[in-house]
Image (cartoon, rainbow, N blue to C red; front, top):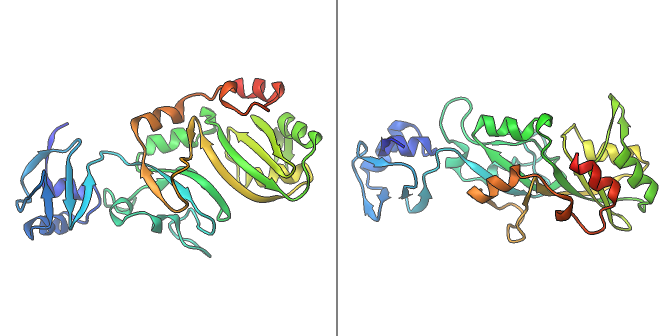
Length: 263
């Protein structure tokens, strides 16, 4: 990767306009490789560069790929209507990356305000499209708590397909496992509006709690608390795109759902 001026590196990472970034450097607020650098035009190999701005440690990322443990009562919108935005959970530089009208990271799909769990964010448009497009069939696993006891017929209907009110084509779960009297683990490969809630309603039940635990092969880390975020690693990115085999699913997964997921 080509070398970049320090002010351009800071700008690309979301620390303000180029003028603001130059000012931060000139005021001695930027440390690079353990020493203060006050030359905004000083150039560095950007990839892998570690620096600190006003005492906050940072690492250069050409593109941002993040995971967030979305808490309840947050909206996946830049302009929320009733609840705080998930973007307020992120540091300002990540929200401002790149400048311009489309600055910052964007959520890869959305979770309802009352849904918790794994949410991906990025400023890479191609990545967002690939992960969001139903053509790529990226499986997403939801842990569902329902109002009424689950029975085998409901599981069967979810696997065979249910008709939603605005779509004549049946929508089916790629996998469906009953994990408790009122609990299901539901795997989907598309993302229609309120899909889990509407599918559960179509089998005469109602969602009480909804949590997304997995995207592709990426599990929400047990040590990532609600409201916390972290950068995705190279291994994380690889696991997202990796197919989920039947062996990776719960032992109680029946043959019908395993065969459906394998298609």
